[in-house]
Image (cartoon, rainbow, N blue to C red; front, side, top):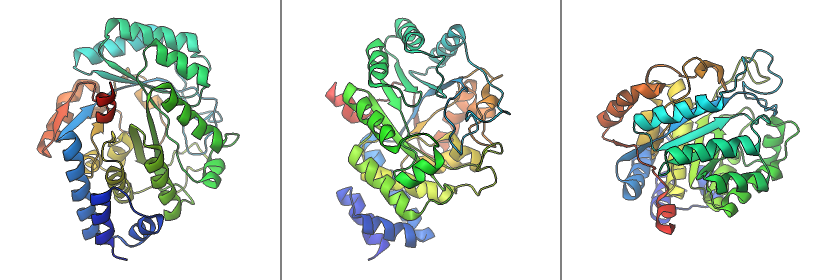
Length: 351
């Protein structure tokens, strides 16, 4: 086997065997990594030109009933400074985003039972009433089929539910009391209901192997999400994994590029986590096939409280008001910022 040949096969056929993917992850050199990123960038440009889509992120609650071992807003973390945005605060964030030109809002929060279906429907309907052409992405974790359906019927367009890891043993070691099968069922339900459904995973988790990462690649290739969120594991001091080593930019960028080659039309964020471990992390993610960035629209006094991991960037160009700063950075790298809805191209065709 030869790494460059495997990259060429991925570029031409958008697939490779599990054995080939594992060989690539085990043996790729720095020069081959650059070649991989170049090929991923070509595929991204064929599908989305040089456009990078902006989403306005609203982190509206950091209460969570889950106890995931890596997450700073886990239920057991007594040091978390908890908050919930009010209905009016959420709408203010959306209105600000619209004024700044954002046409997609990402409402993200922990699994917080306070935000019932009724409350979420009220929020979604009001956003759509005020901004009917704009898109709403939800990221609220696991809910029932009926809950997902009601929110979709109220006007939600997309739902991001990262599968976190496609390895059952690893998933269950990190998510006490949670079911690997239930997570997958939720993703299947979202797609069936009609959402542009997003999956995704972490890179560099403790005890994660390259074989586990191959399972992630195979899962996203089979599931075909409209979006795929990939970020490095970053330890958070108040969690059981607080002293573990974090994932690397290098490995995360390799995974981004591989996902782009496997799924040419996927919406692929260069995450805040990438920017948190390297000042040019997001730019490097974009150069490897990424095409989405998500500046923060949340009120400035709560941004540092949504602490999923340590060292999260939440000021400077993460403030939505500094949109021009992100735009300038992307332009310097040869990319054009697009603030429209930025739907997955296949979804657009279907509609």
